[in-house]
Amino acid sequence: MNEWKNVWILAEVSQGKISPTAYELLTAGKSLAEDLGEKLCAVLLGKEVKKLAQDLFDHGAEVVYVCDAPELENYIDDIYAKTLNGMIQAYKPNKFLLPATNLGRSLSAKTAIFAATGLTADATEVVINKEDGQLHATRPTFGGNLMATITCARTRPEMCSLRPMSYPRAPKTEGKNGEVVEFAFDGQKYTSLAKFLKFIKSEGEGLDLSETDVIVAGGRGVGKAEGFELLGKLAARLGGAVAASRAPVDNGWIEYRRQIGLTGRTVKPKLYIACGISGQIQHMAGCSGADVLVAINKDPDAPIMKMAHYAVEGDLYEVIPAMLEALDK
Ligand SMILES: Cc1cc2nc3c(=O)[nH]c(=O)nc-3n(C[C@H](O)[C@H](O)[C@H](O)COP(=O)(O)OP(=O)(O)OC[C@H]3O[C@@H](n4cnc5c(N)ncnc54)[C@H](O)[C@@H]3O)c2cc1C
Image (cartoon, rainbow, N blue to C red; front, side, top):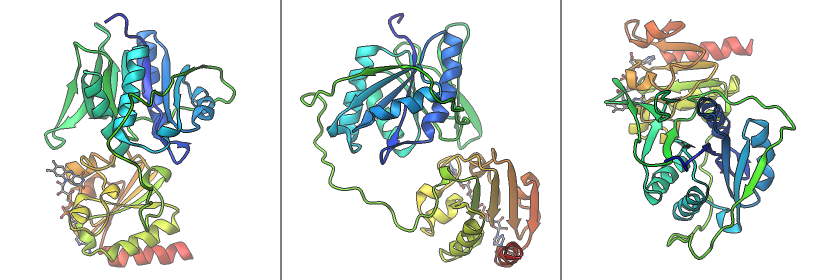
């Protein structure tokens, strides 16, 4: 066990850029590394990604492990997981945090299997237990009614995927120094039966939920897919993005990646406007971190009306046009 040292985070790269989750993981990882007296390290996988290392140093990484290879240009889970396991066996990290994004969820599970270690998936908080130095990862369970703290006592690294937006982004200080460790890609070993054909960006998406401080979310009360166009107008007027509770996603009115909540995304915007959403615990699990919560609901007794900073009683099809008119003035 003593051979395994340092805290790693995976810096996910999307379309040649570091994803914001990397900076959140650096915040979470920093406190773990400080408590353990170990180094905070980041991992970069991809094609022509070495140049991104400086940005990770500027956000607090002390060491960046890089595997830069043309074969890693596009994400294929087998190839990435085998490469990551190769790095784990070579450098023996103690703790390893990955983002619970689509890519991170798939990659963390597969890597944990190759590395024969444990993974706490989808955690919202990580701490070091002062008595034994173990990672305690906490995540909602039983439909969000309980928080479970999970450990991985007998194997290393202790792996964990952390929900995006569970931690603030690490601050940037330009020009910081760090060490780059290059890991050679082994084309004989890191193989897959899957082949990358092409990248297709989904249509009509507007802003991504992680890119904005304002979210306009719709629930079952929106009533139909077309209703989200009205929410889209308000979101566009406020420079924000559209999201939803589970009901509209289940009804096929909006795509799953816009779902907020326990089985969707966790967000921490400055402003969250919930339209026709009742405020069930599974939904609130994803948005209760908003600085300001506004609820628009016909029912004054809906649970969300008590949780909101501003509760607007009314039909969203009257309230939103009135808001748009007021904003235009
Ligand atoms: C294990 C598990 C995981 C889950 N995960 C999630 C999750 O990730 N995210 C999630 O959201 N849910 C999740 N759910 C479902 C959750 O329990 C609720 O069923 C769901 O959040 C309800 O969505 P809603 O508020 O849009 O609908 P409802 O509860 O039906 O509320 C609709 C609201 O709209 C109001 N309304 C109706 N018409 C209008 C109008 N014209 N103008 C204004 N207001 C109007 C009504 O008064 C009502 O308050 C999960 C459930 C389980 C069991």
